[in-house]
Length: 408
Image (cartoon, rainbow, N blue to C red; front, side, top):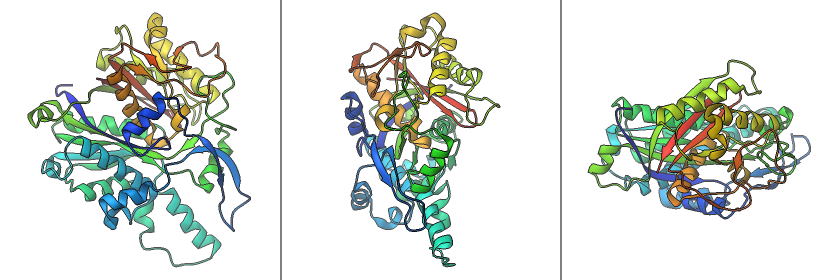
């Protein structure tokens, strides 16, 4: 990449906390945000179900409204509220809130798997359950996937390129790559990138149950007895900035985005392909020059599903060969659950903290090694690392793969 890209701001909201620092502190201490929740769809739905999930902290939206006001936050779906909260923290940490530099030379690219699911389900209850033809006038704007990027742009007065990406579990990884591309091509000096999701709703959880992808109790990535993922909600945002631009304004540089790799399996809608996932990783590793590093921190997609984890372990071996077991692997969905569109961005925030502190957080809920997942998994406790660079993986349904490379 001809223009170096700095990371100057980080923000996050998840079941682990309402700030990036709180999320990092939770994973480094081995705290889990996944608990059993009762999902009740109301009088027109089947019986309530109890499913493991990781939900955002109570009162996060009220606290955000107290800081930012109701003008924007009061008119958007929960997934957009999460994005605005994470963006505010990221821009504040970058020293760019209310900064004139935001106006014309800043872009926003956020990724989401579905959009306003909470609004959608409430509108369906009103229409099909109550048989009411009168919908809330904000129904469509709340549901649309681009509602969050519009909210962020309006909240912070951003007039540059603004758009959403939607590629299931790879959405925020694709958003980060596209935001970096805006800077690389000179279309922006600053890019607010990341993603959010709020699909832990009764109807959507029933859909995920039908896919048979959800765990019975909790998420156990790479553990021999793993049985599925734990759905989560939350959001994470990074501020990417032209390196020279950041230096010129005296910004603290938290890390550097080194490049990304993308691929498509063009195969099965839910089953991953070794060729596809390893291609995305290899392209990111080559772009960042990581293939010969003594140690690289790998933030695994690590959903806790039998097939995905086995395929990802094989991909690590396919990309790094004899060096595969030299690279520590973390799987933070065991702590914060699977944010779908927001997962890669939250993993990136955590990976940058890990690199800066020189410590890899442990994989939680791990009971026994799987011989088919022969990787250097960080389990038990926080582990010191020497890695200064990291790969963050995001492998989505539909065979849509992305891998991100960072340095700190």
